[in-house]
Image (cartoon, rainbow, N blue to C red; front, side, top):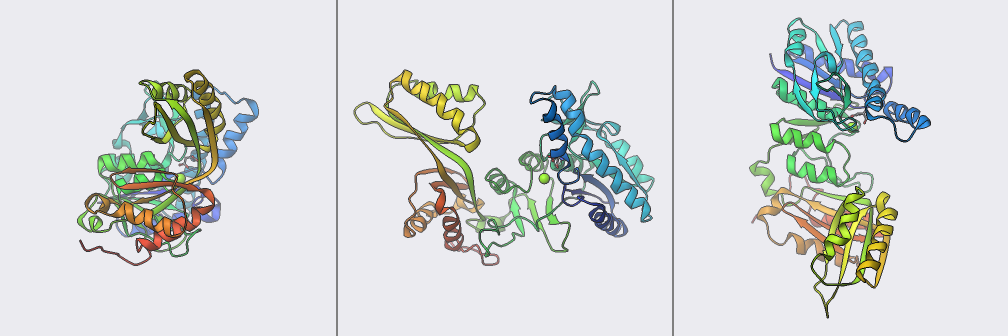
Length: 411
Ligand code: ASP
Ligand code: MG
């Protein structure tokens, strides 16, 4: 019999009423003749609550004990779902990671899955049980409980689907699927039928917070088909899968934005070898991620260097860079937190010319100034004044015809 893995997020198991609703879905899949393995998150807000309790004691807990606490939410939701299923006449058994086991490395709070013993799961399936597994957690070789990072039950589900050779990994959440842009800022946003792993990775890291990035990387590596869909409404979701020919014909699949960025410019830096390293090394050492970097060609031996960091790191980064700037004889350091990054993403960009210029012209027509630009094979990002974020998203969405069903560009 074919195995399907269904993962339910925190809002989907947020109350007993909702857990009953989930149980109905599980039973439906079961009666359609599938072996069902369910992975659950903690009930909505529960993981935050547990972290809050720890914070009341200390900001710096021992990571092993932190995992002991935060992994607990999933135990409760897994047990509650199994009880609900049994109560509805469906044999079910809840399992924690160590009972399977799902072996991870020992990096507490962001462990990586190394191996899953599928035998224990298959044995229960054979006996006719639906297996409900606590997501987000693992166990290291020494028997310590680990967790996979926030949002990690997506990764649990994908890893289980891969290990079990499941035909599909369904991710049930509070949205209908992946949209061409954020429906809350543009009503013309359209749900995508399909999206490639690479596009999804670009979209995920750009702020479409539907799937944990690592779960998509995992799915890509092991070729696990993911179906993102709503646990509340019976509508078709979005399939995340390998790129196919049809996808290549679509130039742009989505427009994303991120307002949590800030810009730092080092003005009139002496243009000498080693300057960039001097500026960025202290940031790396402090664990501050730099996103976009732009350096101008130099005039009379001086250059300007501008880069972005996430807004939460801005103050620290600014102080660090000010110090370095003095040491290396730069004229000034300027900071700006009122910026946003607006991006277009699409696998078809690889084979289509003129996408960037269309993006720039579209923004120019609205009088939106582009402060920085960066590109990858399947993405173009522009930094603009934050007040233009929504406008930029809408005009780009229109310019690339994203509202229309199955837009296809002829060469
Ligand atoms: N409960 C965990 C969290 O809130 C894991 C998850 O929901 O995927 O991050
Ligand atoms: Mg999630």
